[in-house]
Image 1: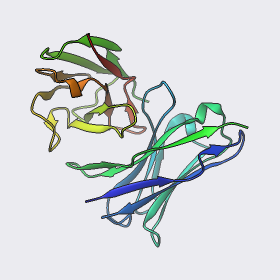
Image 2: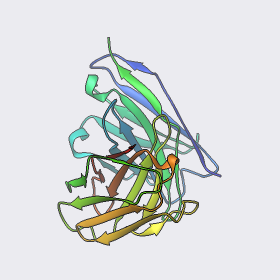
Image 3: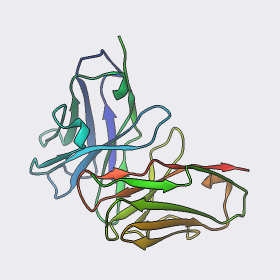
Length: 116
Length: 107
């Protein structure tokens, strides 16, 4: 059974950088699949942030391009999200996600608050 | 970017009812569409992929249909555990985009 676990600071200062890691068990980030981040701001809907393939190829939400980086860490079997120049609008529950055509797995989510 | 528009944004229904949620895409997404259920405090759960294929383990009272630009999620015989927010997601092209959500509440 694949399990994903997000970790990282729960509080980030405005203009700072949000950094989250998703630890993967039961699967390998070196495998041929996409590793994805999704977020949900308080009181709002789900928002697709972006994803990374095992070979490092990435795709990002248009409005975040330039601030967002998603990467894989093969030695530690995890993948990460970095979002720079954060504002209060980046406050959200962040989820990591993976899967194939017929299966999908989500982390439980982690709340990141942007505040001074 | 492809825009996904769900309707209604919210609806009230009773246990045992049949409900239908619609998702419209701003351009053809073929059948590259998922439906998700999201309960507060939990991770979203995929119900349907490829527009009409039921995810393993999801009750058969959930069904999806449509292709191109118009899709529907139907829930038959509503159960108390079905009251949640539902989202569609297109994955034909990047960036992937969610609908704004439909909140299903108990009448």
